[in-house]
Image (cartoon, rainbow, N blue to C red; front, side):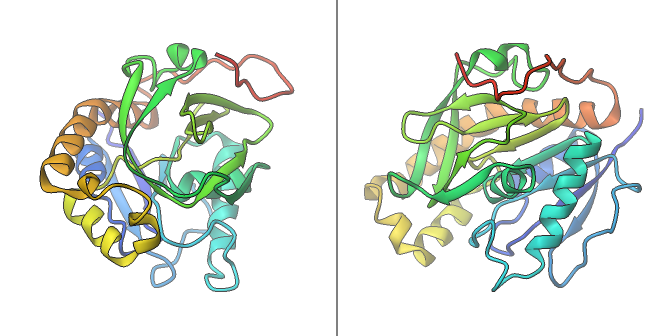
Length: 253
């Protein structure tokens, strides 16, 4: 059985791969982990079967403080253009959106933080990674910016009342998730301690031990199989999505 080699990009030391990395390995992937700017990104994806890009505390276009973001967006643009299997989480999903013609802006309704649910859109029921997800999926939110506009050829896969662009696909194999599935209770508590603006946006019970343990158990139950399907997609064991010809993003449902 082929073990796909995945480039895993960690833009922020404070957001490690966590369970997501474990799920990828358990599903049979080999990981090439890069933490820029200390570790450079490859010029091409010729030596990789797929890409995973994690989150971070910076903004998607914060090039003045993080000039290496331009190269990361270029790499994600190349992945989307070549339809390389790609999975981008939170900041990663924002970087992917900007790199492919969408836009990111400060959240119009303030920070979205804490345990949450997102709902499948109609297109998700026909998507190879999302079809087997439940109608409502447990996730963890921790973002101040939003994906204000999806790229023109994006398919919306999941939404929520406050911020509709929660999960999307570009082409047949490229995915963005605005929310987190890679966190642990310890990571979340460290974020809350270092970002009081976001942490103060939710009730204190969102960060208590019982709540964090419960939500991360629910996230694992839902999202580990999803990650396994992504590895199968990268390995060529799972057929990619079928794309209908359209000049507009598919957002209804």
